[in-house]
Amino acid sequence: MTGVLTCVSPIDGSVYAERPVLSPADARSVVTRARAAQREWAARPLDERIQLVLAGVERLGAMNDEVVTELAWMMGRPVRYGGEFGGVKERATYMAEIAPQALAPLAVEDSAKFRRYIGHEPHGVVLVIAPWNYPYLTAINTVAPALIAGNAVVLKHATQTLLVGERMVRAFHEAGVPEDVFQNVFLDHETTAGLIAARSFGFINFTGSVEAGKSIERAAAGTFTNLGLELGGKDPGYVMEDANLEAAAATLVDGAMYNSGQCCCGIERIYVAAPLFDAFVEKAVDLVSAYKLGNPLEGETTLGPMANRRFADEVRTQTAEALAAGATALIDTSTFADDGGTYLAPQVLVNVTHAMRVMCEESFGPVVGIMKVADDAEAVRLMNDSPYGLTASLWTADVERAERVAHQVETGTVFMNRCDYLDPALCWTGCKDTGRGGGLSVIGYQNLTRPKSYHLKRA
Image (cartoon, rainbow, N blue to C red; front, side, top):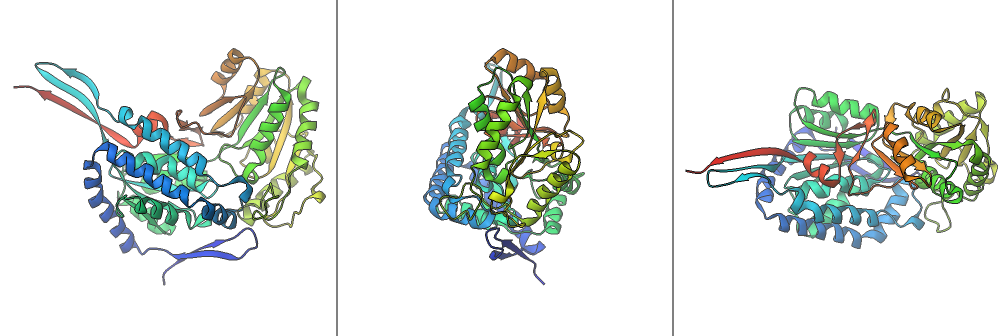
């Protein structure tokens, strides 16, 4: 019997979309067609591939009104925030602009005797396994540069955002990208693992949980398939005594609560220098108390439901454990429409310690713990006291001090006076259990191609 993937809407618990999974034979057929189409695609001029990808992005943008509503139904983000197209366009456009230089051969010698250079060869077929929390943004990080570099792409989206892959592929096909060059698939875990184990792909990019990342690695064991993995996060903010208090509180609270806290690089823990601690906490509480939790289809809603009840229940459990261990909750949750299900009231915790899961394990929800620190050394020790390392946010007026602290923080990206942002000119990467590899920037193209050396001796 064929399996079915079901997207249950966090808005009201209704079934929003269903799709049958591909059989193993049909899944292998997808890969076969992609391999055949990739050769012709890679043979096209680079500029032609770039223009077709950009046209696909523009076509996707033309669908944005429908996309925003779909996202609200599938994963709960309020429609007032307008979807993800701004970031999608920014990232795709930047990667298109740098492609001619990033993919140009690296010349070593061009003399009367020799022509020597290093080229960039596409991997072939790239599998993108995208998450639900930012389904378009996370997918475009790999889809756009992979296609531009001459790869074919197979996109597998999370069940919670079941319709995203279909819409992306339709937009690119309507713009002229060949159907077999960019394909959307609905797969169960077993079939996905089987394709990976059979060396179906030259590169796999996965964004998701640590445990799922381990499953990808196990499936790929012995195949030498190139992997890019962005896994868990527990990103810290550190507010130094010379920080702009208003800006720090507003930005870090937004970084903790936006998308109901369901952000890969969202702020999950905040450390504040002692002189600013009380004032920072007061401002944070005021900001969080002003959120409106409700139906994401309503324009006044600023905090939507979490994508799935089990995600909300994990946040509730972590919060309850912290309170039982001595933490103090500062938000009156009775003023929010918390239904005990997907609609979860935001929370700010103080008197927290790293003995509590809410300060050490990924919460991925609208809760943040705030701790007082004595100096940079204590802040660095606490920021590094985590199995994850995606981003860290430092708040100070002193650039040199920020750089000194940044050098000591175990993370993939360090921000000064901002957070929860992905700069396409910089490599998006992590360390420790956050994963391996890197996307976007010139590094992204290096990961989506393999080096090939040419040593040509002239007669």
